[in-house]
Every structure is written in structure tokens, then in C-alpha cells.
Image (cartoon, rainbow, N blue to C red; front, side):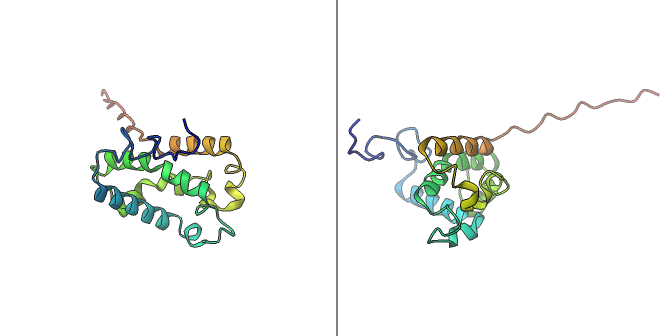
Length: 149
């Protein structure tokens, strides 16, 4: 691959063939991404407000790349739990595993600085976050126990 080409021109990403936005119109893509980013903003308000990245790392390039890398996982959770509805509210509910996880520490620099420091560590963090976002089937119901007199 040419080093000068962007990832979009190499066919990677959410809108590339097979990506979660591939079958969507441009208007739908825009609406979904805006709804997702609004949900990220609402889910991590302090990190989103830190535009100078003094205390939080969400708005740094690596933080945004990781959150955008989780868009397919959030959409899958919406498919499963929200009847294929992609709104700020549905994304917020589906981002709960991230907001409740100690892995991100609400994106505080002290919590994620090491994990964002190299490409390998960012890849590892993304993998761990994707694992948190996996749709888990409901636990099977316990068999009814009948009591014999």
C-alpha cells in the first residue's frame, strides 16, 4: 500500500465495503455519526469539555480514534437492544459499559495516558473496550424446580 494514501482511500473504515455504515445513505451516515458523538459527549461530559486536553484525553487524536473505532460495536448493541435505532439516547444507553468501566477512568489522562502512548497499547485498549461492548446473550433461565410433597 502507498504510504501517502489515507485510510479512507485504502478502503478501511466504517463506510468502506462491509463497514457498519456502508449500506447507509450519506444523510444517514451523517445523522448516525452526529448522534454517536453527541452520546459520547453526554457520556463523558468532563472529558468532552476539556478542549485543551489538560486533564482528559478523549479529545486527543488517539482518544477520538478509539471512540470512532467503537462505533460499529455501539451500533451492534443498538441493533440487538434498541431495534436498529441509532439516536443519541440509544447510543448513550449502549455506551454504559464504557462509562462504568475502570479501564477508561472517564478518559482522565492519569487513567489512559499509558494505554494511549504507543500504537500497540492503543490497539490493546481498543480490543479490551470492544470486549466490554460485545453483545452478550441473556443468561438461560434456571430450570423450574418442582417440590414433591
